[in-house]
Each structure stands twice: as structure tokens, then as C-alpha cells.
Image (cartoon, rainbow, N blue to C red; front, side):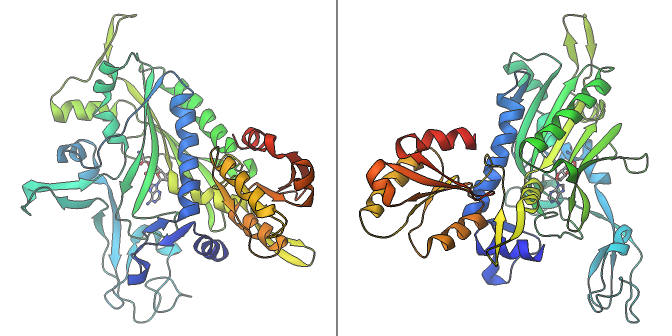
Length: 436
Ligand code: GAP
């Protein structure tokens, strides 16, 4: 992880937030390569969940919502973790995760094990960030930064139903920021206080929920394979009765084997009619669905798929990272699936003379109309290839002596390092076919 974090900073994937002020705890910024990578992942998700289907609509709900939403959802009362403070070092820990934590005074020990540790009794700590709406700071003006995007979907379910031609079963998908004041965030962008979720809520007739749940489990695992994650590093974790969230009838996590262990990257939840039932109760508005085919009225059950965009981004970085020995040197390469690679192709004039820079410049501007490209004319060609390997660029296109005579360029493929010649007129189509 240390090597990956340092590569991410060096190559402009991820920077610490407000770094020149010493950083802000577990908040991160995406640099030029990181923003492209994360955007490609979100685009792939949107394409699979919204554009490729005719039973799911998109939504972009606001982060700030009516405070009653969070009472209805159960977050005001129950979105808490048990917290203990150390009176000596002032550090805070999750009482249920002390086994995994380290004492800041003596990192070889767990909190409470060092002779000077003085831990308080656990108290429940709500993870929602609070702020005030309008100019007054009083309890009546409290609003929350949403801790999940899902609630924006539930409160808009009837709006979407009435404004689209959908009928149950159908889904609503959304990508957006969520905020949680995590007690023990960490592992780089794995657990942060500000993050993005890619959530989809599928509304179904009660009784068909278990069947839909199984379908969504299958489709979501297939999506992770489709962005190139190694199947052997992915597995299911089923939630036992003690683990289930307050809203869930059943829940499975898709886990990935990170360097710090197996951890959740997406949750698939059968939320029953809990959410619509609670919003119906708290808002006083009828949220039932009338099924014309069967002449029945019911409150739909919800099957939710909830993935973290930042967590999936981290997963693709970890999964793609390789170190290889090549001609006595270590080559670091990010073997991203070409569809999510931030830069699709680099254009490299072999030397800065003999008309090569002019040809390369023309080709670069032509390719740039089709996909993100990078131009590099500085240093030995081997060094330039290595820089592109570290950025995860699948194709390097070198303009050389032969280009000036027959119009072909050398295309070097990132993973196998094989080289073939492609005519410059066919290059954009050749690359497009391979990067999706
Ligand atoms: N709406 C259901 C829900 O929010 P969750 O299991 O709490 O369920 C879903 O979160 C996903 O959101 C997780 O699988 C993870 O990918 C992402 N996520 C949750 N908390 C996160 C955090 N603090 N930092 C980064 N991603 C997080």
C-alpha cells in the first residue's frame, strides 16, 4: 500500500486534501489521472445500470435533505458506532474494533494495553455530519450531509414513476457524494469521511424480492469482472443475523482481497418495504403502488446495490499494480483494463528531428479528438515507455524513421510489451476498438 500511495501522489492520481496546511484527516483529492480513472469507472457503472437497460432511470438528488428524512430512515437514532476516548493521548477508537487499532503512544500495543492508557467507557457516536441551514445556528435549522445517496431515491420514487413510463419492477440509479464522520477512517481512499456512492434501488412486488436479489447479485459481480478485477480476488460475504443493518432482510457484500485483508467494496441489500414504509409513516404521504395488471395495491420491496466509487477506484489501482524485472530493471506498471485507463494512448516522436515532432504533433491532435492522449518527447524512448506504464496507458505510439516513409507507427502494448506497426490513418479506429 505504501508503494501504491506514493505512486498515486507522484503520478497525480490522488493527493491529500489541503496538503500545504498539513492535510485534513482522511479526505483526499483526485489529481489529473485519478479524476479520469474514477470518471471512467462511474461512466462504466452508469452505462451498465442506466443506458444499457430499459427498466432503470437516473437521478441526481441534492446532498441536503429535509431533516425528517434522516429520522424516518433510522439514521438519527441508529447510525452510530461505539466510541472510546483515551484520556492520556486524546485519540479516539471504535470500541468494537480495538483489536485492529494501535496505541498511538506505542504502536506495537493495542489501545488500553500501554501502562499510561486511560480508556473511557464506550458511548454511541452518530456518524452524520451536521450543519445549519440559513443564518441561525439553532436546533430548528439543523440539516445533515447525507450519509448515503439512497434516501434521495426513496423520496423521489413517486416523482420518477409519475414522470417516466416505468412500471414496477423498475429501478432508480444515482451517483453522488456521501459523508460519514468515521471514527477510524483509513487505508488511503478505502474509508474516508467524504466519498462517492454509486447506488441503485430496484422496486419490486413483495414476494418477487428474493428472486430479484439473486439476479442483482449475479449482475453486480459480473460488472466487477467487466472492469478487469481479478475474479480470484473477489468473493461474497453473507451477513449473519447479528451483522444485518437495521433496514435489511438479507445482505451480501462483494469483497476484494486488499493488501490489508478481505474488505467490502459493494453491498447488495434486500431492504424489504422498510424504507418506503418509514417514509410513508413520517411524511404522511401514501407511497403505495397500484398494479393495473393484477389490480393490486402494495408497497414495493427494494433491492439495493451500493458501491463506493472511491473504493472501486482503489480496488482497480491495487488490482492493476505490478512490479516486474525487465532487462535487469524494475518496471512498475498499472495494468488497467483499457476501458478504465485514464490515458488511452501516448504519442512519442523517437527523436526531435527529421520531421518526426511535426508528424507526432499532428497525430496527437488527431487522436485527442477521440480519447484522452498524452504527448511526450523528452528523454530516452525506454524511459518514456516506463512513465506511461506507471500511468497505466495501454498503447504507446512511436513515430520513427519508417513513419516518414510509409506512414505506419510503432504501437507498443503496455502489458506484453509487444510491438506492431499500424498505419497512422487507421490508428484512431484501431485504438478505439480496444479501449471501448
Ligand atoms: N445505502 C446503503 C449503504 O450505504 P454501506 O454498506 O454503508 O451501505 C455502501 O455502503 C458502500 O459505500 C460500501 O460498500 C463502500 O463501497 C462505500 N462506503 C461506505 N462507507 C464508506 C467510507 N467511509 N469511505 C469510502 N467508501 C465508503
